[in-house]
Picture (cartoon, rainbow, N blue to C red):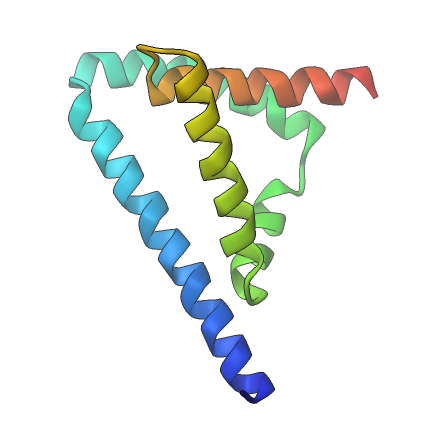
Length: 113
């Protein structure tokens, strides 16, 4: 395999993770009604605003991870494993619960530094 083939494989895996993210988002949206989603969105926006204070360059990091071969694939694989372990340990939870947990955990971690 040439270096170009390896890069193309890495970008294809990154694209696979992008599609996986998109399908996961659509699945979560379909599982809830509009009023629930609006209420959850308001609370998550507050957490995201606080999160952005501690991690201001996060959007650039995410865009760069999709541009660099394999980076988004490994990053998302770890996140999917983390989700799986969260849902295994915490029965009857939703993606909203995971997002609140993840934002809160990252904010607390940043505050403790």
